[in-house]
Amino acid sequence: MRRLLVADDDAGMRTALEARFLRRGWGVDLAASGAEALHKFRPELHTLVITDVRMPGCDGFELMRSVQTASPQTPVVLLTAYACVPDAVEAMRSGACDYLVKPVSFEKIELTVEQVLHRAERQSCREMGSRKQTEEKQTLVGHSAAWQQALACAHKAASCDADVLIEAESGTGKELVAHLIHRLSRRKLGPLVALNCAAFPEALLESELFGHTRGAFTGAVGARPGKFETASGGTLLLDEVGEMPLTLQPKLLRALQEREFDPLGSNQTVRVDIRVIATTNRPLAAAVAEGRFRADLYYRMNVIPIVLPPLRERRGDIGELARYFAKLYRSPGTETHLSDALIARLEEQPWPGNVRELANFVQRALAMSSGSEIGPEALEYGKLPDAAPLPPLGWKAGLSLEEMERQLFAMTLDATGGNRARAAELLGVSLRTVRNKVREFGLPPRSNYRSPLCP
Image (cartoon, rainbow, N blue to C red; front, side):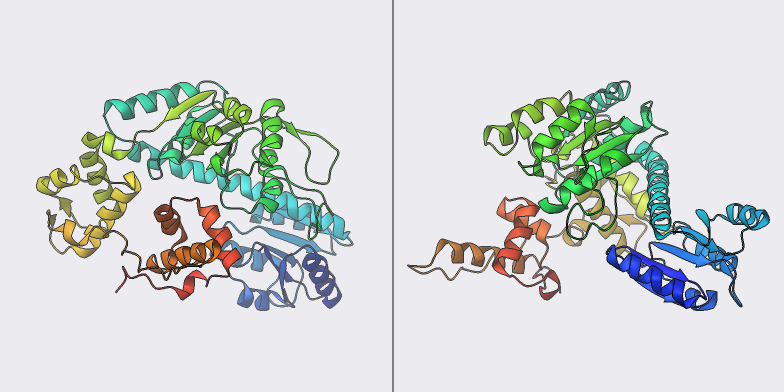
């Protein structure tokens, strides 16, 4: 939930802003002075700060500078009843995201807040892209034929604006390849906006994609742009697109075909200039055959298909990747390295979790070793065992299918310590299905579980 910190020595203004943003679904904290605001400010909690400029003691400028020092990514909006050019210049030079002069309408404040957050999100995407560049140069490594073929296809895709569908198992680097395509494309100065289609319930996913107007649904107390609009001028990454509900697929198809859409609650069509990259960890052709995914949407997205090989099909790259992760995760000032004997053993492993599993193994091995060289003995403690077998289910004659299913989900979650992603993998269902069953059966929250894999 978004949370606002308001600092103003005018009690009426504080109360009015609190009421306004509470109606929009925000959490709100109030402070009558800059010093009180600094005491209440939490970087991990507050989405935005609105502060009056002239307050006794610590004024708005001092508060803003302190906030920026503690959390550079937190936007600050300044309010003042004493408009003057020097103050406005000082505000912009000091890094204020906006500067409003009282009296100001609450509609103007709300619009300013949305614009500020929109700009902050775009900047965050650019900074993330910059960080990814360094990571991509080092982690998109490997000289196997299958891997080089996939990278060559990604480079060709970057030279045009056609939509891309990346199919690969989890942990193979789908997101890194998507970032590579964006970074090498003509859109590299625009935002790369990602949306995990499996992370939102169906009721919210449409709003996340296309945005909504004020009053579009219960709780929509203000307009909000969706990912399609936020990504305009850049690239939209639709992660795990195979989890897209069938009911939303026609609207997504239209948006991809026409590059236009209607936000929820609006009859005004919004046009965007975007490139779409979709990823999936399951073959979409099979989902089409099973009726879980529209054929026309599949063919529309699958303009440039890229299939990333699993790690077991590029064993020659395992040693290079393992040594890279060893350099990445080892403690500063140390020269701990992996022995040739260990590398040879790693190349024999199946790695069902692919590159992500290999990275986790190397990080664990480094943490648990004490010498300068890590040998094959690391396989004894550095690799997690398979999940413990499920205890026998209490099935009896006459037990309903619903109760049998409830027991199966409950015991699988118990065996994985409440890890829903691992439970989904064991059961062969999607993460969305596990979440839905947890709600349907009223199963305990994940904090109530303890994995048998943990001591």
